[in-house]
Image 1 (cartoon, helix red, strand yellow):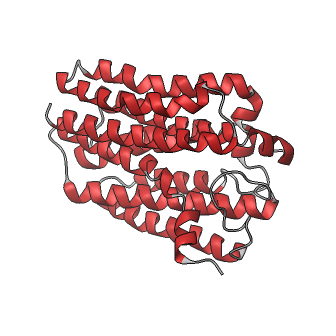
Image 2 (cartoon, rainbow, N blue to C red):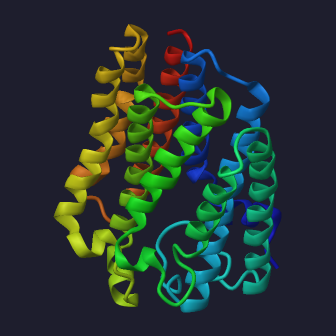
Length: 289
């Protein structure tokens, strides 16, 4: 029987920056338009956190019952390690999605009804990433989904529910956060190329191969700092986003040095931390614009 600590590890807390950063940036973008609303920002954070924990449990369940995680190198998987029954992990995923749905409904009721459709799409996308008969995460579309849902949708959605509009600064910021989120998944899938290849999971990393995946990680970590320079057009304070550059360089270090397996775990951690620092710094800068 899994302990509370193992359940927490199974929720993959290292991915939480992917949920927190877009809400910070979206709120900063809303504030730059004079439209920040603190309680809507909190609700958006609940939606984002519940979705990412939910998708982590859903992936654990779906990969576990397929046997994809039988020889996994990375963090603990609850089903794959046989610590928890698949039905319990599935129930945890559904519970998280329910929390996201309730918080999202509150935002939709107070903002715009069509946000319900966006929320439903997010939940469907979360489940079918590795769930269903033909999961799109097994076909190389995981990075695209992360870019869209935890970049464009999360940042622009957060900005919209508060300011009731979006602008170019919100859009380019969403591209930056989406790139950071993709970098985390690229590092994860680079680490898993051998086991994913063996299990038939055709991730983008498997399709690109080792060397091109390492280049992709560098590109995804570079884009946010190009965006930082673009955001100077809104406020010179945007340059504080460069504070995350040393962490981004450290995140790419094990990737560019040819690290494999467990040696790539720091790349996941530091890619997420770089995103969080960039997001917080950029949010403050946009708020001051």
